[in-house]
Length: 378
Image 1 (cartoon, rainbow, N blue to C red):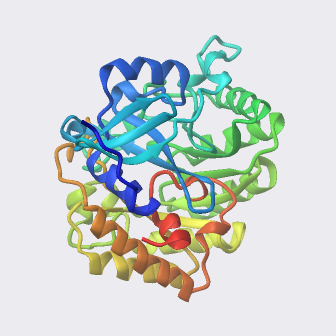
Image 2: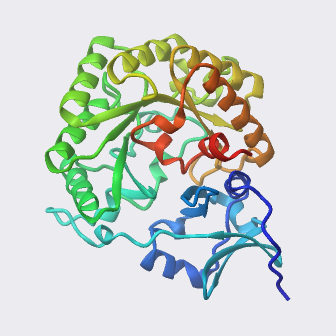
């Protein structure tokens, strides 16, 4: 007989545990979740569950099951009161699935389902990957942790006009309060940034919503400054994230055969430009934990970024189908929680506040528990 002990784990630990182990979804619930809730990709092992925080807010946890999901000790149970996560025969946590937004069932003017264009990845957080066709994949040099081409059950390339229509519908419904726009790396001087800027401009014509742009370091600094100034002034862009992923110089080119050739000095230059344009607490970088690097290299990198006013959004590696590291063991929840605490201390020492970010993945928080640790502890 199942029992329901009192939950003692913190919201940060629950989130870290689910992101480490994945979450088994009973087949009889998968169809219901996709039809009635914000779970358009649950059948492909990607989902957002929400946890109740001590402040009474919903904390999103983005989960990628990959191949480990089938063996997860955690499984979803539906009760009369809602959804719960159980570990074996005991309840572990209450979880909430956001209701399916109405715009998922709409189409753009060209007849494209809006659910294939952008998705909700947390309360009020809309995300779209403008292009999922990475140049590095095409030349056989992908980042080994990356599966951008399988991000979710979506169109691999979206037109800026389609995204703008979808964002306008999501905003009108009240489902979106900020948006992340990102892209796979393109074989162009701007790496795909110009498509993000064009998309932001079209969005601004249809809806008032803060936008984050997420892109690879651009070596043409005059082009970078021009595009980001346009994005700020004409696209409603408030936030930028230039993602370094790995600081370890002995691993960068092994893990990222093409992207790893971009020197760290180039990221520092890009961050300075972004900071000049968007200001304090609006520039971030992502570091992926669990791809072979040491904790020391991660913490030294966070310190180096923080010293130039850049916040690090620590994300646990979630082995995803289609990536070279699809079967790599993810970092443990204990490791992640320790790193989150140390990273938070570094940010505070430099006067940086992840909670002050206006838009994007850092504000949404679903991919990492670093903000939750900063607010509620580990």
